[in-house]
Image 1 (cartoon, rainbow, N blue to C red):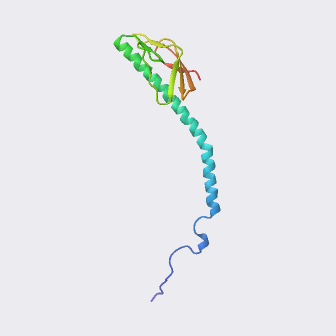
Image 2 (cartoon, rainbow, N blue to C red):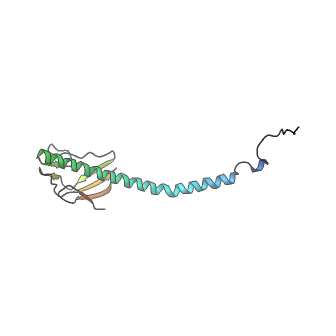
Image 3 (spheres, helix red, strand yellow):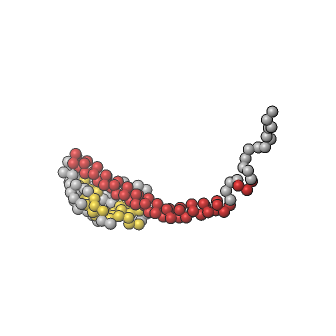
Length: 141
C-alpha cells in the first residue's frame, strides 16, 4: 500500500508568496508617472476635438440655412444678436460666436463675406472667415 500525504498544496516557503511592498510601490510610481505625462496632452486633445466639433456645427448650420434660402428663394440674414429679421445659430453649452457683421445669404444660396469668432466660456478659441460664396468657412488660426 502506498503512503498517503497529509500536507496541503501551496508554496514551498512562505517568503516567496505574493509581491513585496517595495515592488508594489515601484509599480504604483510608474503608473502615476505615466498618468502625469499622458493626462495633460489628453486634455489638450479633448479641447481641440471640442473646438473642431463647434466649427463643424457652425459650418453645418450655415449649409442648412443656405439650402433653405435656395429652396424658398428668399434671402436669409444670420446675426449674433437677436433681431426680428435675422436668425441665430445654436451653439452647444459653453460655446458662443460673434460676427464682424451679419452674414447675408442670398435667395440663390450665396453667402456674403464675413468673419466669425468662436469662443468657449468667454475665451476666444478660433477665428474663421467666409472662404467663398458657398458658405464655406476657413480657419484662420
